[in-house]
Length: 152
Picture (cartoon, helix red, strand yellow):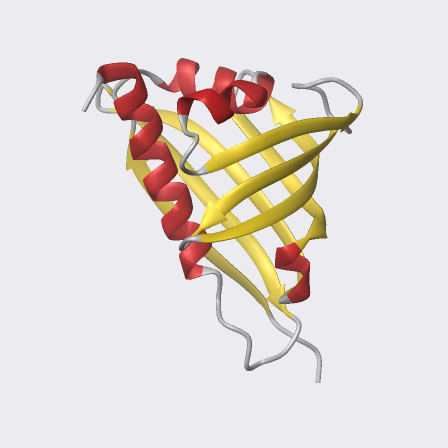
């Protein structure tokens, strides 16, 4: 039986500004290890340049107290829309999910900036959990990055 495509979405207000969030996450992700070390322990460039389509990044991060790795290729970066997408090509998540694409979009609504995280994925097995803990990780990471700029 073929797996069905699934999607999880979270949207979080980000006070330091959407331009700041997009710039750091899309163009300078290596700085996230200093800003959010509880969440991201390493961000290593394996191919290309940070902030360019086709670049390959290896992450070391912690979700629910468990150390994990992810290898992603950056695709569909759009500076005017403040959007970028990361296709999972290796790491722990591919043990549970057939395909995974993480899209980050920043938009302004009624004078406030919002970060939208979208996870498109397919379960390898129907018994596998949906990546809700990963979505929670993104929410906590975003609020932690905000605190890094504004203080606790």
